[in-house]
Image (cartoon, rainbow, N blue to C red; front, side, top):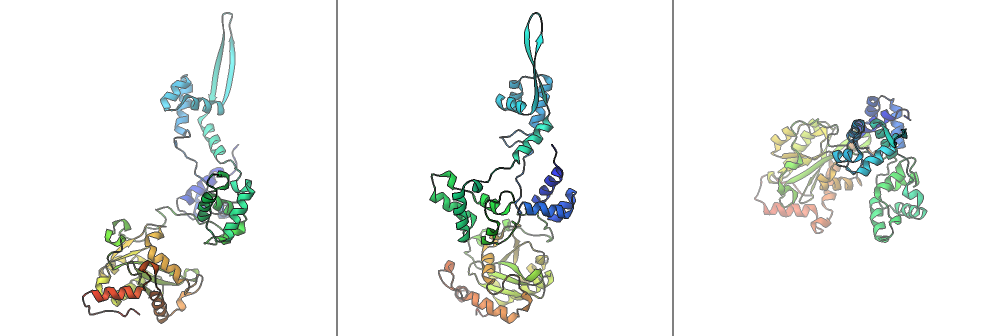
Length: 407
């Protein structure tokens, strides 16, 4: 039985998985935007599993099914077909028995009673049946096990993440597989309609607080807006171990409705912070603020900069020429490659809450905030303050004509 819009739905999720937006995926798949939005909400933003089109080693592929069909048409034996495929004879026999109309009859002869078997096997029908069975509804583990469900819900209320819950359950019940569950199962039980073993309102207990899960973009997500980027993989090894000062990480924190922003620069070794006052998010505005920021510290403390692949850095070549900075770009959707900057941006939300207009903050207020942040003792610095560590570096360096205050 061919369900309506099955092919369109499959195509929709393929496009979403490839990085298209819901609107783009729906229109390309041939359905209205509202239909694609409904599918996305029903799935809770969780991408459905991909049904493999080629052999995964365990399941037969369409190509192998076509070879089985050709072997049956030639009259090859089950063992001969299996040998040609490199499969067990039982695999081929099971495939035929599950996906054919098997006719068995006896030929009537005065001299013998011989049994004759004919196989009516269709590869395309077998492949469709496999897809249908692979997507059959399964009872969620948390829906079956009330004790496990209550335990997971209690831990979610305590603000534990699904991964923390999963790991904790492994330690609590090392010998009871029924009392363990993966973090992915917990996410799906919250978000996916039809698998909602957990209360949907528990989504607010997650750190993101999202009602829908945000799909991960692929490496080729709609970027490509920055010419001549140098990838982070080409960054020198000395940057990674933080042994040499002068390597920075940067990004923007965005205000209400994406209409305002503040630039953030964090030095990797000292965690020293500089905030960029921006009148807009254009590449020209960021270029101007970046060049001005490099004048505040000696040139020896400006060796490289690692940034996200945001369009605000389209003028990275001009910034490099003006500042002698080597600029590298992170891979898409990998914020941990700018770990110090990401952590600092999270701390800055105490001063610049999400959903607020950041354009109201004056340059003087940004200086005040950065000074407070640079006076915070850091565990990673053995409880020293970033400004103290920077001051030590400056005192050891040769005298420079332009040295900014570290307050």
